[in-house]
Image 1 (spheres, helix red, strand yellow):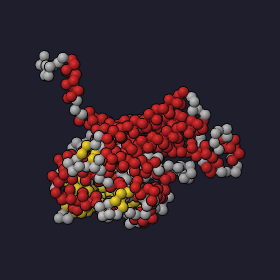
Image 2 (cartoon, rainbow, N blue to C red):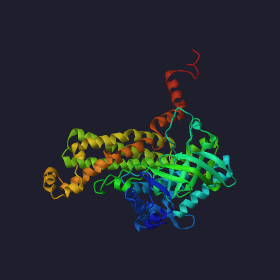
Image 3 (cartoon, helix red, strand yellow):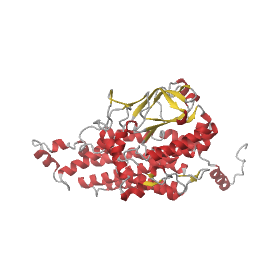
Image 4 (cartoon, rainbow, N blue to C red):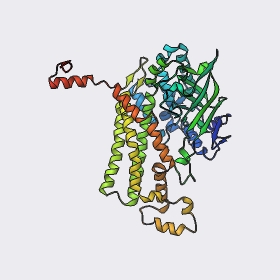
Length: 476
C-alpha cells in the first residue's frame, strides 16, 4: 500500500488542472488545494499504523495487505466491518468529505457486481471491469467519478445536447468529446471513472461507462471557486476538507477499449444501473450519520457555551438532532441485516431500505444547519478571527467582549468558527448542495421509489378487511 508521500508524489504527473483561469502546476502545493491533499495523504499513512491495520486493511488475493475499501462483501458481517471502516475515516473529517479514498471503490464494486449484466452487451466489458477492479485495489489508487452532465436546457432531449459522447472509434480506441460536471475530487485523484445514468432521450453514443487516468492527454479539470476563505485556524473545515468540484472536459480523448465497461448500449445500461449505486448509498448514509453526530456535538457545546442547555426549546432542538442520528443508524443496520445477494453471492445492503434512508437523510439535512445557526444566534456571525484575537490593539476589547463564558475566549472563538464553517459559510452551503443532489435529486428519487414499490399485498389485505372480492371493485 502507498504512503502519504507516495500519494502526493503521484499527483505530479502532468495533469491539466485549472483554478481561477490558471493552470495549477503543483496540486499538492497550491494554497487552495494543499490542505485537502495533505488530508488525503494522512489517510494513506493511517493504513500503515499497526493499531488501525485490521480496521482499514485486509489481506488481498496475493497475500499482501490492501485497503478494506476493496472488500467484496459476502455477508452481513462483511457489511458491518465495512461500516466500521467508513465510520472511522468519516469521523476524521466530521463526515464533511464525500469522496474519501474508500468511496469510489464502492462504485467500482457496483460495476463488479453487475458483470453479468454487462457481459450481455459484450463479454469483454465484464472482463475489463474485473481487471480494473483488481488493478486499482492492488495499486492502492485514488479514484474519482461523475455521473452528472452539464445543466443546459432540460426541456430538450438528451440526444439534442452535446453531452459527453462517442465521436469515432477504431480497432483499439473510442474517441469521446464533451463535458462531465461535478467531478468531485478530480484534481486529487489518480483515476477518473465516468458513468452515464439512464435518462429520457438518451442517445446511444452517450451511453458510456469507462475509466481514464486523470493525466490523460486531452482531459482537463476546470475547478470551481475554492471555499477555503482564510487562515486555517479560522476555517477549520474548509481549509482541510474542501475536496473541490470540477468540470471534466474531454477534447477528443482516446479511450482504450480495455478501459471501456459499456458503450452505446442503452438496454444494458438500464439493466446494470440498479446495481452500480447500491454500495455507494451505504457509504453515503454512514457518512451522513457521522456528519449528524458532528452537528449534535457542536450544537451541544454551543448551548453549554451560551448557558442555554436547560432552555426547553434548546433541549427540543438537541433532541431532534439526536433522534436524527439514531434514525440513520437504525436504517443503516437494517439494510446490513437484510442484505440482497447477487447471483455471484455478493451481499448488497438492502436497496429499498437504503433508498428510503437516503431520502430521509436528505430531507433533514437543511434542518441540521438551520438548528445550529439558531442555537448560535449572533455569536456565530460575530466570531472574531484569530488574527483579531492576537492583535495587541484589540486584545483587551475582545477579551472583555468574550469573557464570562465557561471556557477561555480563544476556545469560544474556535467553537464558533467551527460552527460557521459547518453551518453558515460558503463551505456549509456547498455541503448542503452536495447532500441535496448527491445520489440524484430528491424529487426524482421519491418518484422512482413510489413507482417501483409493490403494494399489491397491501391492497389484498385492504380488500379482505373491507369485504371486497378480488376484481369486484372493477366494473361495478
